[in-house]
Length: 231
Image (cartoon, rainbow, N blue to C red; front, side):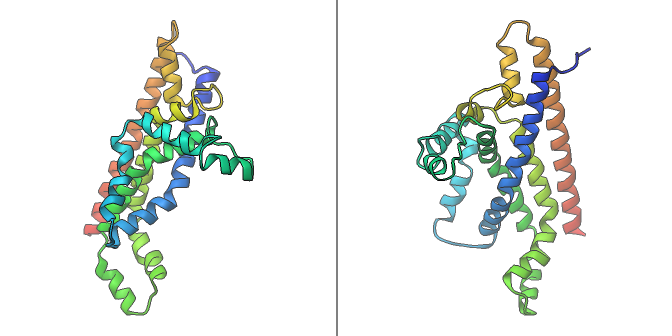
């Protein structure tokens, strides 16, 4: 029988949930906007934008973490400005873990939302425009409500991906207990110390349980969305 979680493990679990939550919240508006652009508009360079969007899925996570460090580190071209103007430091903080998780989960979010937008009957949007509705009203009264199940499914997948993020996080914010040590980083730490097998198994079971719940939830939402569109 597995023993209760230690305070360090609880901190890692709570931090992981916090990081994943804010990663999804911060990336959701941009994800929906980009998904709509890719679904509804044709423009030069669309294939390039689509390819750049999916880069985090094919590049080693360490590369993404290094690029974030170059851009958002204290001496990075963005991070330096944020620190000098607002006193905001992102690297090696939980906010940096949010940024890393958001970047790695962003392609899954956009792809799922885009599929839901593609499934919306554009004739409904055209009919609303014919009746005098503006683009924003069409989006918020027709497109967005019909896409909500797909958006929620994308949020669930992004949440699961954020909870499991490791490579970009450890490269960008390191592995600091109580500050940047998320669940995957804590599990990695437990595998590197003597007699850490029990703790690693506890964290592994928690990670598997959360991931299964997220995937089952996303699958249920996708099926419900399919019935909604088909019916």
